[in-house]
Image 1: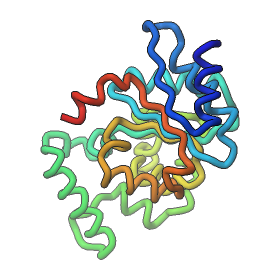
Image 2 (image 1 turned 30 degrees about the horizontal axis):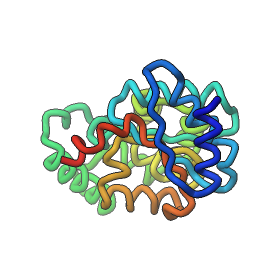
Image 3 (image 1 turned 180 degrees about the vertical axis):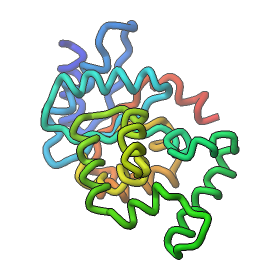
Length: 209
């Protein structure tokens, strides 16, 4: 309760709150209980270091509210439905992904069938992505759900980000300026309209290095 009260006070005063407490005490839940009542028309971004930390937040979000629309990402490569691309470095993967998407735009082979389906069936892809967001699915669950229906989960979820009020992603989505600007543009807001929860913030110096 002290954590929630102090965090709530800090947020109302547009200050930064740093909470330090033992594992298992409920820091993730307390953070959400401080932010969500103040969310209103603003957005919430939660960044984490490991996938296990993401799943803790997803569990709490599902329990707290039925009205949230939440999108969560791992890396684009991790969410790619073309499993054969998994052996590429991230730079090579990114270039290959861009090439296949560009080929979709010009209807040139080879192209990515999952991205092509988004272009051809945009409304269906966005409705399915919104379903994932309202169900607060984990990235791997969204990938399985969307790919079985022929769509790229990463691209479809990114397109419905303006409808979401919560975004969860790894540190890269917040602390890499290029990725952050891309996500905020998709989110449809500037940082002044965003509450930010940084999980396990003591890891940031090592991550930055």
